Length: 108
Image (tube, rainbow, N blue to C red; front, side, top):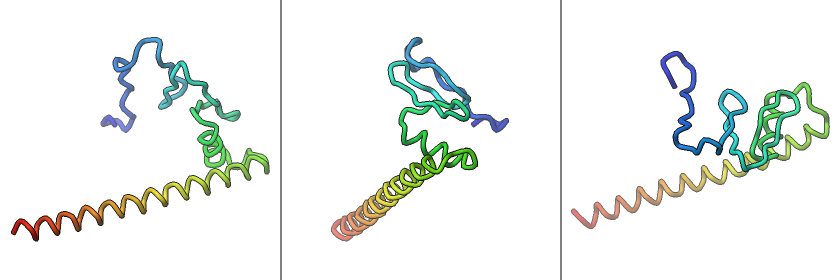
């Protein structure tokens, strides 16, 4: 982030010139990957699941009942994945803590 509160510019030197195209303020879509676009604002996404989550979060008043049901399914799946990741991260921290504790006990 810059001091003005605007996000830093994308470092286009890291990519080949024809490799990316910018379709929005903070979205970079690779040229060889198909993008799914939001029908309401045109923002591109790499995955239809991400586009479904975007529509449910950013355009809740405009989506149909079918789109709302798809959003709710995607949201619940995403929430389960995040919960699983948090539990794995907590397990790794606890394992690391006890490994360091036993290492300290052996060394001293």
